[in-house]
Structure formats: structure tokens, C-alpha cells
Length: 222
Image (cartoon, rainbow, N blue to C red; front, side, top):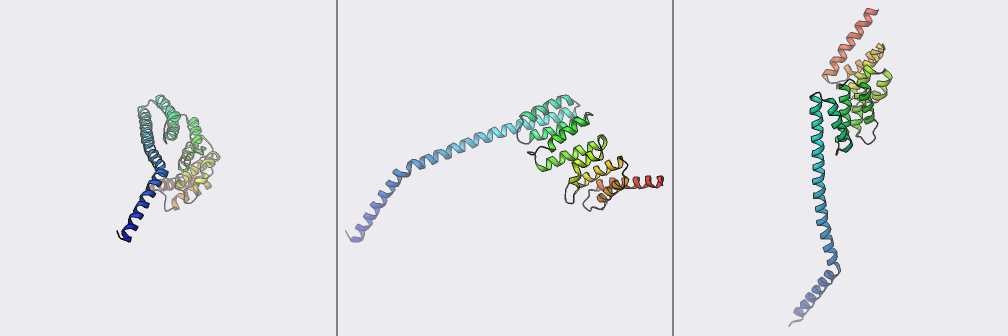
């Protein structure tokens, strides 16, 4: 046997001994890691099934509430929404609160509806967009059932340039100002809507109509 062959055989023996030693040292760890992977995968499958099931149940309950409202069964709809608000999954409890406020408004209970919208608007856990929407919905009800100050307290911050809700917020403020006889403020707000190139056609059209109405009223008064 040549020296090279002997050296190769010695190296091979050493490698095998090292592999066996590593196996004895780290084998249990590798098995444990494999078991953890299997358990984690199983846990995720169970959680995913549970989560999907709960979401589907909440979705069905929300749809049921909508159908009850459409059928005029508002009291039954409110009970379903209350159940969803207390035990729903994901975003559905928040949607249930908003829908409850809308149902109360449709039932001719503006004060209760405003209180419910305010509840959502003041919930720090709710997404910012949902909170702003709730403020806006409360303000629109307050145009007829509150004061300019009530409306401003909820949507004045939404009238800033760049806010996607500024057009309707300005319209609510303008209507509240006109209702209280503050024509100059109302005209200024309607003009902001008219001059904003991003104003939706509907909002701009209503602002132009109201501006003409207020200007005509001023002319008749003069």
C-alpha cells in the first residue's frame, strides 16, 4: 500500500469518526427541531381552520343583519348586530357598530345613532379611516340635529387640504353654517368645494347650487 493510499484511508476513518461524534452530540437536537417544525405546522393548520371558520360565521351573521334591515326588521337586525359586536371575529365587530349606528338613524333615532358613531370615532383601537368615517357620519346627522359647533367638533380637522374626506366635511360644515344664518361662512366653504379641482362632480354641483341659492337670498334681502 502506498503512502498516499494509507493517508486517504486514515482521513476517511477520521471523517467517519467525526460524523459519528457530531451525530451523538447534535442528533437529539436535530430530532427535537424536526419535531418542533411538525408541531408548529400542525398548530398553524389548526389555527388557520379556526380563524377561517370564525370569520365565515361572522360574515354570515353580518349578512343576516343586512338582510333583516332591508326587510324592515330593524329590531331583529339590531339584536344580530349586537351579538356580532360582542362575539364577532376580525373587523366584523367594528362593522357591526357602524351598521348599528346607521340602523338607528334609519329608525329615526338620530341621538342614539350619533352616540354610536361617536363611540367608534373615539375608539383608539379602530383604524384611522374608520374613525374619520364615523366622525363624518355623526356630523352629517348633526347638520339637522345639532349646532355648527357640534358639526365642527367632529369634522373641522377633516377639511384640511389633502384629506380625502374634505369635500363632504366642508359640505357638512357649510350646511350647518347656513342653517345658523352664517351665510358668509357657508359661501366660503361652498367656494372651497367649487374651486377644488379634486372635488367630486356631485359635491361640486351641490356647492354651486347652494352658492346660487345663498347669493339669491342675499340679493332679495338687500
